[in-house]
Length: 184
Image (tube, rainbow, N blue to C red; front, side, top):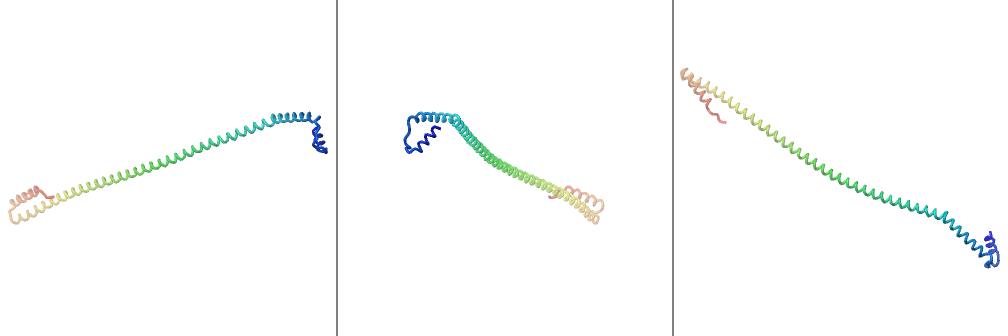
């Protein structure tokens, strides 16, 4: 209260700049001590907790930044891993396509080879059948020719030669035709 009165008397007094030094130094010392005590109390009660709070907040922010940096590194590692897997998948796709193409080409060649072999077997079988039929036809023609020749010879011989000689001549002709080699 004393300070307020002093300030009031200074401000209301015409001689505003005049200070009484008898009372003021003890009050100034007292007020100075009060200010120091107030600063000390504020420092203990407010400044330290605020500094601690700011320190904790700064540490939390730093930790968040560190976590963000770690997550960014992990994300980059995942991205690189993903890109590597895409490249590997692309290479694997190419290998599979090449293998499939080679396999298809191999199967195509095998099918063509089998078809050619089957066609060759069919042609060989047809040639054998034709040769067999040709031989059979030759044999039939030979048999018919022999029969026809024998019949003609017998008819001619019956007209011009006696029966005993005719039988012998027919047998000789038949025997000669049977032994004759037919051209192929």
